[in-house]
Length: 157
Image 1 (tube, rainbow, N blue to C red):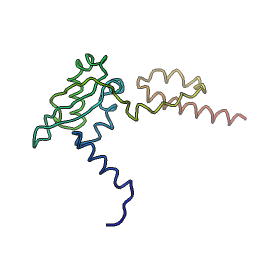
Image 2 (image 1 turned 90 degrees about the vertical axis):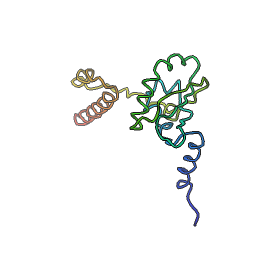
Image 3 (image 1 turned 90 degrees about the horizontal axis):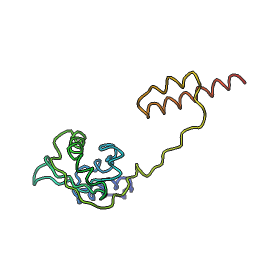
Image 4 (image 1 turned 180 degrees about the vertical axis):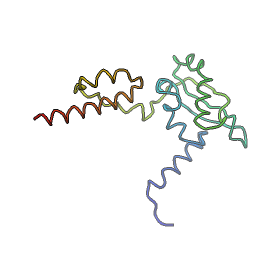
């Protein structure tokens, strides 16, 4: 067997580390903000997922929770179980155990959002964009509207 690149080894190294800490599927950790939402992901994070011996269902998910937010997370445990099971696609988690401690921000939380463009939105498009409920869709459409506005100004010169 010849030399292997580090890129080939990384999934195996990560998989081994995650299994050691009770995570059969590392995507629960990497996609935690997507599973529970950014607000809950800031105050709790998955620590371990343990299944009964020989089983891959009805596991116990252990979460680390910021102490001040533990009562809130305790109230939304049924919702978190439902979201995690929807992520897995089956009844993977039946219980959640909480442990109070420091929650490290995930990579997705650490990346700062780019500031919105300061260019004004063309007046004729601005009113119709305010009625869009999804903020991400509205931001994309506003960006598109700004780029259309730039093209009109260049054509006038």
